[in-house]
Length: 288
Image (cartoon, rainbow, N blue to C red; front, side, top):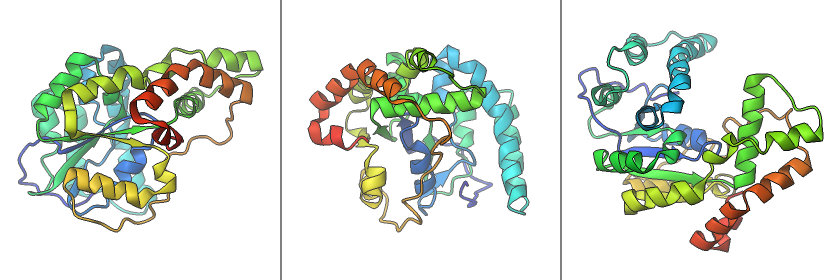
């Protein structure tokens, strides 16, 4: 849940911390953990989808769905907990989702206006990692004070998690092994975890403002990982609640058979080679 500190007189601004991905690689965990930090201001909802709306036209149809549904989800969350959504947040959600100026630079900057002075606004949108070259360049130059965080998960495990999520959303299940093998060849599973294509663009344009972290440290060393993020972003040390908590683990009832997982590992062999050559074997061990 978003930080309820709210500056109604705040000025439009840009985020200072941006989680760019990868999808299904712990970005929800990162957002929830940093949302506890007293210096960090989070929006009421994760994923703003501003830059991918600008530079990835095929995302636009489902981004509209995102903004039609998120305000209702947040209001329902308050009701389930027996509370009432604060009026300033309620009107904020309405303006974010219904502005005539959605997806413009003033709209994006306005999203962060309630952040108290001196705080670090954050935007965590995993799809940003897949931006084309001109999108990455624009984002890195326009957010010239921002720090970018890229979580790297095992390519096959990440794709399997994405597939399970998609199957759950579509309310369907592969019935045979051949069905599963066709599913794991779906091109949609490749783009979000194409580190060999995506990461060099970010390294080129963000330079030392990019922090690349292995997903496995969320399980093996969550406090150490968060301390590294704090140092990188210029935050003070903080004692986070429940850093071992798994966020959005995915539907457990959907399990890929081992031949399908083997096919995914074979499909993404070039990604493993790229990560090993770029970061070394210890990093590769830590991405699971």
